[in-house]
Image 1 (cartoon, rainbow, N blue to C red):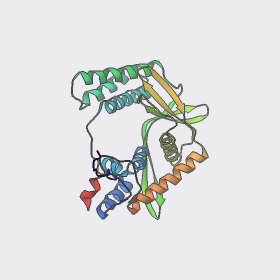
Image 2: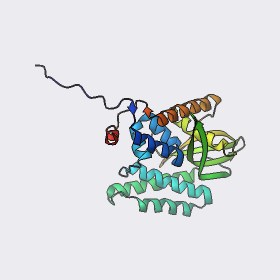
Image 3: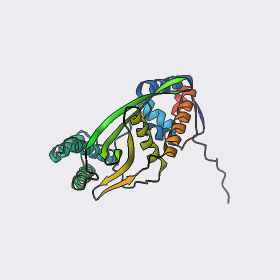
Image 4: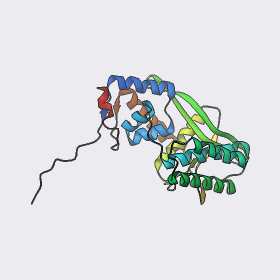
Length: 260
């Protein structure tokens, strides 16, 4: 026996954004600025980018986010002060401000975050001077005759014998270092730093967890920098024109219909 069925709908194709969406995106690009994480989010799913970045729709907090925020705060405090007690205090403040329900799952979040910070403090990935911690950088860029803002807040810059090294900490248990988004993110930071009188010579992703502190060097090559500029200009052109690329299906695919 055969059954009739409707084909699955195409959830997301190229978007021709309505006027009000174009106006909101332009305000975002000129006032808040496109960041490395926002760029990667747009490349994956334009509607998700619009919802989270432009409209600032907040999703419920999840354990992974709470852990990442707390561990980043603890590491940043330690890199700034070299005081382990202050590092744990910063981590605990973040956990206390978490909106997660205070249940057994929350206790596991606290334990995971605390053990992650403890392991990092016992196994610092680099020695040497930290020249910037949780610092934001910005620059203006002309695309298609319009000036937009580029913005990024990087985790740390270390001074090494080879020069300044950009470091981004990841608390994910599964870091795919060959994922091109990592190279794009660090090349973006490199671009911002060079526009602000820095000369980074290297970059790295540092994975931190309860049992791991592992550094993955990410080369800042001429090719990587060239690819970033090309991607940036293509994405900004799309956002300014309102003709967005196709992306992965997301929960926000129908959101744009509200603006027509």
